Amino acid sequence: MEHLEIERKFLVKSDRYKQSASTQVRIVQGFLNTDPERTVRVRIKGDKAFLTVKGLSNKSGTTRFEWETEIKASEAVNLIDLCEAVILEKNRYHVPIGNHVYEVDEFFGENKGLIIAEIELNHEDEIFEKPEWLGKEVTGEIKYYNSQLSKTPFNAW
Image 1 (tube, rainbow, N blue to C red):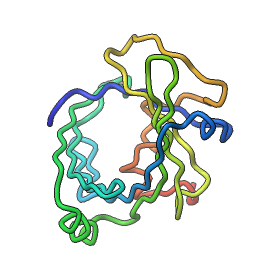
Image 2 (image 1 turned 120 degrees about the vertical axis):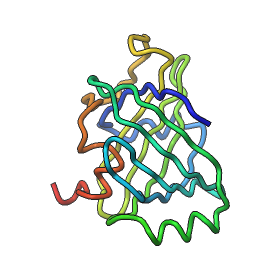
Image 3 (image 1 turned 90 degrees about the horizontal axis):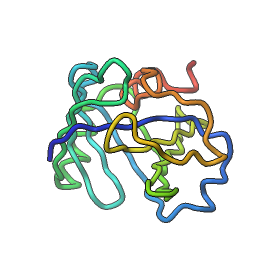
């Protein structure tokens, strides 16, 4: 499935999001390619697996092309063995706020201590609620992209 992904990213300043989370899932992912013009990601999310290609972000960092397809979990395990550098491990919480759902990622391993919230929007100037646990906006800051965290983990900053 392909579409334009419009999202904003924020640091998270407390764990109060967990009180409002509707679901939680464990994610393991790696990158076959981290070139900003075409990142290629392998992700195991719970008992499902996906191959995703993302294009270059626009100037503001909010919008980019995304193509994703579901693959067999066994294929994903084999592909993760071929991935670059650091494999990312995180818990993702889905937190409904107003008319949107924040995806809050709590990282482990070499990115332990980093918590990022993302919100997908229908258009770049869409208004959305900002809960009190939301911190500094980091949309467009490349070091917070998962592809970059796999090369230069949070604990190496």
